[in-house]
Amino acid sequence: LRLETDLHDAASRNELVVHYQPQVDAGTGRTVAVEALVRWQHPTLGMVPPGVFIPIAEDSGAIGEIGAHVLAVACSTVAGWHVGGTPLELAVNVSASQLHTAGFSDFVRLVLKQTGLAAHRLVLEVTESQVVADTDALGELTALRALGVGISVDDFGTGYSSLSQLRRLPATEVKIDQSFTAELPGSASFVAGIVALAHSLDLRVVAEGVEQPEQLRALIDAGCDRAQGYLLGRPAPAADVRSRTDAAE
Ligand code: G
Ligand code: G
Ligand code: MN
Ligand code: NA
Image (cartoon, protein in one colour):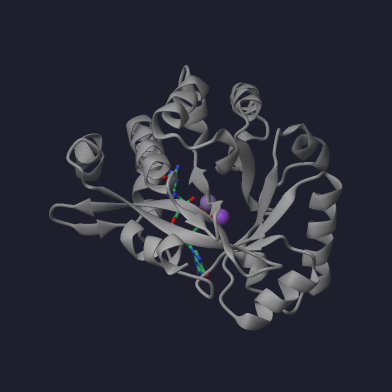
């Protein structure tokens, strides 16, 4: 209950910190995107991880304000980032409850306009199980897609969605869940099957949780497009990531 009360003020008190984790192109090894991952610097409890407070924020309704804050901060931070002259893309996690907020896609359009981040550089990550059977969420995702924003299916393969449900999602990308990556280089044919399925639906494939060189090798061999994980870079504050991107050129 304490956390829930404090959460409502976390954004306005500047206690939310956004970290960024690189996503690299499987072919070139170059960083092409970053995923924004929020942390909560609580005044007395210290760093509270999102796995703890995001579910509480979803239940209490604080997720609307927190999500809006993360999106605005991440877009304005990443707008000027580029590697080798190519602007970086930005992935931001979005809860289904945010998609239910009236005017969410209008808010996204406003943030893009105010920060100067082109719509095609933004990818919103949604969890398959949260949105797949949710008509209102699907409608909002379609509106976002129409803006030019990418839609990524996070934790892909861990839900129980049917393929026909997945085909109805206006998605542009899937993220192979880290539980599958962890089994590599075993299960390589299973992952290759996921990649082939996603490509047949014209979806880009990002693998999460890449920790070992053998896993990266197996993912490249499986035709995966992008990779993300501790091997390629841990989530870090903006200043650290920035020094590894355009300043490093
Ligand atoms: O960074 P970490 O691995 O601890 O993230 C744990 C979970 O929190 C992940 O499932 C991630 O999707 C979620 N998460 C991180 N940042 C955000 C955010 O800004 N909004 C939402 N809705 N979820 C987030
Ligand atoms: O669910 P989502 O994909 O949004 O969350 C990503 C989570 O995975 C974050 O909490 C992030 O800190 C974590 N993460 C990122 N890379 C790795 C990795 O290589 N290994 C593990 N175990 N976790 C990772
Ligand atoms: Mn994610
Ligand atoms: Na994930």
